[in-house]
Length: 259
Length: 92
Image (cartoon, rainbow over all chains, first blue to last red):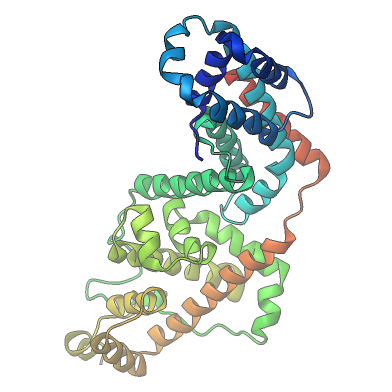
């Protein structure tokens, strides 16, 4: 049974007003007030009980529900406790997860923060059946996708205009790629200095291009899904990757291989 | 030679674009042949292809090694938690 919170809150009010349910409603009242051990599960257990109990009375009991105000404050306190609990329990995992998916750590922190804000605002739509963790991560995923989408939209740098190729679309003199001397590829990939250089070069890219480039490796989704999610065409996507790679190649060439 | 490549086959710009497309969503048979012929004649684009694949590998490696490496110190975690809670405090 999936219950909407607002509906449940009305039920508590109804029960509180109805004398015959006084015992139950006072239990809920205690539940709402009790501080630390109060978990969402208990909370919903009581609500379910009431829902089952007073179902038959709802139509006419509702007529009596005039003044609920005294119940609003405790409900809000309960929500705050719940969110605070979640922050303590899940924020570390969420941060680690976000940091692996977003290029800068500050942005990962912001996104986790936003996730909890949204979670608090949308707490009414949280269903008892789902795990808080799953729900929070779903919001976080949405936030991350949102972030990438915004960064693509904001990226206005033209893709066509570049200095890598001449008017005949052939490599522009000095841009002609030359072989990189890579002795041991695996070794180089683990080299911390190389990683740092790669980081620097990626930071020099326009944000949207860098995101286009890394997104492929962040999610297991295929390109079509990514593009759909990001609101860009596939052609646009690989053109962006192309530009990013050209620039990154040049940067690595200059600051690592030709150094 | 360069002129011939561009008029009959692909330009280097198009060829490098196809190199990326190949890695992202794959090529159709016609594109694959065109690219293959271009690469067999153009050493610049051949190097570009190797380097493009290498860059992809290194980005993947960096991300995947990060997956296990990310450590958040206790102080940092407390700081971030504090930030989250104080932001929530405005809304409460």
